[in-house]
Image 1 (spheres, helix red, strand yellow):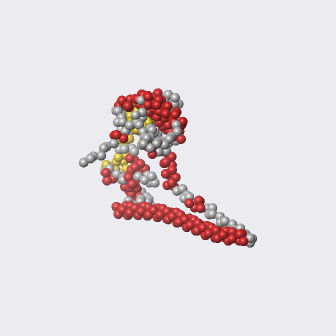
Image 2 (cartoon, rainbow, N blue to C red):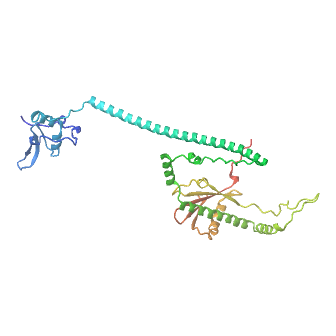
Image 3 (cartoon, rainbow, N blue to C red):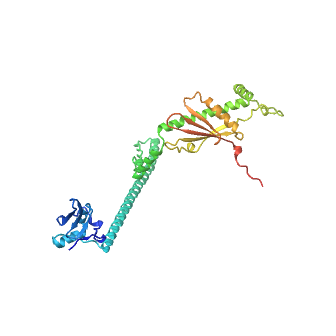
Length: 362
């Protein structure tokens, strides 16, 4: 019978190419050679099919059709697994789905039982702690009564043994402490990964202290430039103040010091405040961006911002911290950065209570 080419229906399915399947019938596959002696195709005598790919030879010997033909024509005792039908495949999938659902249910029930056991232990600890406290206070009340009786007998001169005070529950703190769970350890590990290191916290503290001190010196410098006579008067009054003696004014006389003629004008820079994550203590590791706000008496202007930026480096010359100061007019701020690791940035802005929205009057 002439050999027929293989068809798509004869191609073995991927399910048959299991690693456990042993190829059979290799002796019944003959090679077809050309006149030059080169193998050009293969011919299977059992399946009466032909294929040209040398790599398909082993796959064909593992195929279901070839093994069935081998069992039919060569070895009837050869066992070929039955091809699962759609119904059996569906039943197998349903069985696996039920098995997975059962495993999920058992896992949830085990977690619930573990949680219930933990809550039960906690309730038992709280119960015994409460019982110990009640027992302690009962013994304490009894001890106070015995002490009253002991004092009464002592005043009468009757010898009586002194009562012993009750011992407080020693395991009270141990019962209060809850053992660390896996969730607690996971949260603490996450917290350690985002919390700044000791080196970063020390650098932040040094930078903030240096900048705040420099801003106070800038405030004194600007106040002295704006009103030099007032600063000298304040210094003299401060020296004379301890030697002054206050006297009560006589009837009809006005008390001294009520005149505001010599009182100096208020400072331009009144104070500095920490804002944002710096004020809340929420700095993150590797993200050390801080902010300071300088409170001004008047509405801040570009001229005032430039005065502060020009005087700030002069006040930092005595400091050990090496900081770079940059005026950023676009953002109306002064940016201070350090020159060492870890990298830190501080943004200084100016504001005033005058900037608040005025309430509308109708």
